[in-house]
Length: 212
Image (cartoon, rainbow, N blue to C red; front, top):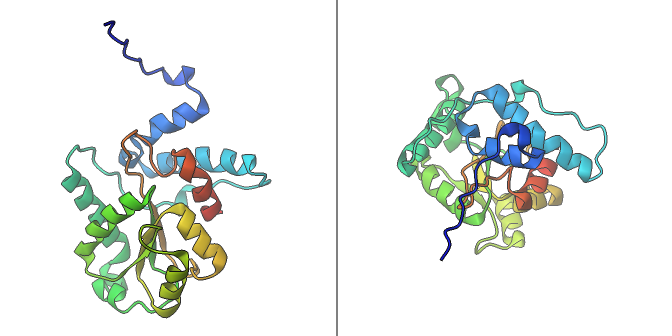
């Protein structure tokens, strides 16, 4: 049998915009905020233009928060850094710390985490157990949209996590609001093929519409 030749990575100059976006997405969590902004806009603006939205402006770097996630192959280290990021931006002492999450009563979540799949959202739920608060589950696994509409109408959740399609559907329905939401986290954990929620074609369009 002939051995298959291993494909070589093309230099940036030889890659298409789509390929460059995917390549950049694989290291984006370890980069500084200006790179996050440029990366998101590189997906956001062309995607909305293709969908027929005209005159849309890109996001500015002041809309982004966080510190670079250190590259590591250990899942527990990545989960720990993710949890530390949430604590830093949701639980600062001057805003009441953990008490703020425990007493949250607004119909808008304080934070919403957008992941590429229901499977990844379930992984995020396990990470969030470290905060010991109620989390709204906004993805399709074992939950119908009608059940989530009732859930959001009857309860207040300081944090929600879900997939772009279900979050967008609940926003358009009116059951979910971002009016008082302070943090929307684009969970850029890669799937088995090296794609994340922004570079994956199936979720990119919904993410961009959601942000718009």
